[in-house]
Length: 357
Image (cartoon, rainbow, N blue to C red; front, side, top):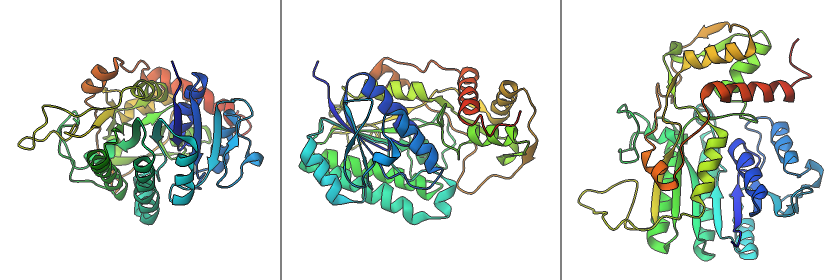
């Protein structure tokens, strides 16, 4: 089988790093892109890149550099908003597949700096679509988010649901990506697949996510912030299951749905080569149970500061993923107990000089 030439964005990020590691291991030719912004620790991002054979000192702004350990991997530090660089990348490399995981992340941060979300998640996404328009690809996969479900309360969340009531600008930017992708699928026949991620966790995770924040605070004898007084549920999904799902989607670009009708439009499919999937565990966990499992793995009890709900947040997420499981013949394998144990082991090893004995 001829291995695909892939542009993967956000490769210094949590999901992008794990996915890139898997793709190069399996022989795909990958150019990884990231702007290494300071939304959270750039040290963690550079350390992820080091795992891929990309040393900080070798990085040249806006120029691809080769990995020291993977001959089928190059890395370029640039912004998605840099249209000239993006256009040149597509023209020079003839990508078969685009996997866009780069974005300004975070629900709460979108209240502080909304312009970052427009620059990266809207303008940057448009640059990728335009490049794919002029340099056609076989499959354009991109990260959406469970946040698009917003004010919806009917559970589990299904891709057939209306998602017109976002609770944050981050969510609105992700819904915008889905609409933009459909437009380009329709006008330019680009096969696009949007993935609504549900609370991804695991080793090398993001420092702004609950598992990281709770573990860090507990190991430093600090209280943890428990929002909505603990009355939260999340469809926690382990990183390896997410990566497996994305990998299985690569050779399966969407095709037009022959049964689609404008009289009863299905939001998840189209008359164009367009598809939306939830990608999650489909097994929501109560926040307090999640915290108790962290306590079990750390062998200590957390001091808990019970807090009100944060603006832009939602009390529960739960993914209906039957259509994805059917499409790729895969169900998540990792339970929360195992996933938290793996994260805690990684955290202690990575921060061993900082962890209190």
